[in-house]
Image 1 (cartoon, rainbow, N blue to C red):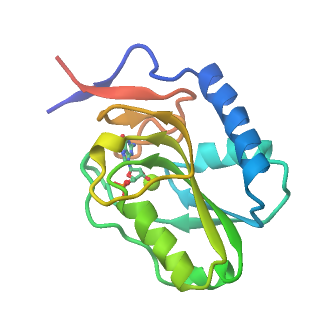
Image 2: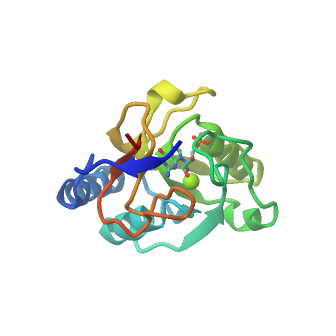
Image 3: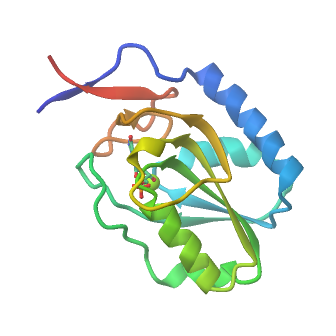
Length: 174
Ligand code: 5GP
Ligand code: MG
């Protein structure tokens, strides 16, 4: 099947920027994080925007996790083993682009806690509650969306569309 992106964005640049600013205020008012952890690659734009709006100037580390490849359905979550010692004793704000089945964040939060993290709170730009396969709730989220595949604002389909400044839906081409 061929796919194309929706002509109009699901969330415009302005809508995203306003919500990111609000989210930063919510987080700053309710969590004394001392480390930001950002999940690559799809969240790289969200991480950049949100982290600059947050008021605490704390270290930021990236974690690589991947489950999609060139498909649109979730596969096994892959997390490289090595990167977890810096999280011991930290109060971590863990940032991802989308909460879908829940497997990625559930696995990462468990790993961080197993490696001695003092506290982990999660923040996602988009939450698709209807897709959940493991019980997982995020502490902060930008928007709730339906079961649809989205691209743009850092998020890809087969490495395309990441540089679009707004979020678009992928639909089957007519
Ligand atoms: P989960 O482990 O919750 O199923 O999947 C989370 C990851 O799948 C996200 O970090 C994101 O990279 C990817 N993902 C889930 N839904 C979408 C989507 O609609 N579009 C894109 N581009 N990636 C998605
Ligand atoms: Mg991801």
